[in-house]
Length: 197
Ligand SMILES: [Zn+2]
Image (cartoon, rainbow, N blue to C red; front, side, top):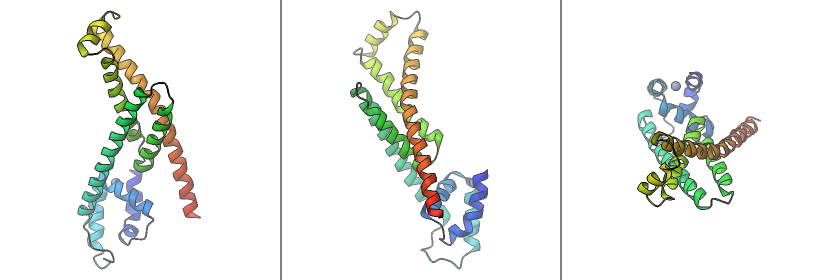
């Protein structure tokens, strides 16, 4: 809600191309997710038809562009996260994953400024990979099921254990991603301060 007010205030400057690149990116990210601001942006564009210094693009076309760019980056982050999840278990006894997830968290948060997205993107691939890796270590799903079941009272207990340990893996990795995100947040705060000086 608060973001919408800020976007509303900045729209005239945005249309005149008077904002920092970072602010423009932030506005465009917001516009891509907020219907009401998008329609306001379209109205503002219509209200200032005499200022097309830049090649005239409709807000809708612009948003389409931004959204497809975001989708590509999102895909890249997901792939990267999966690659980190897999290399973590391959290099299980090195601490490389700490650096990998720190960087993943840093860059995801720097780019999207979203805690939820940062956490999901670091946690979900490692959980999926961890489930797969546990089962694969038994040779096959059938072998895992029959052998691991011997150590558990029930099927529910077996799957609970599998999900629980994978979730724990996800949380441990995500802690380092969150640390990276915190550093990203501080970095942004510092650069914003420097820019305003
Ligand atoms: Zn909005």
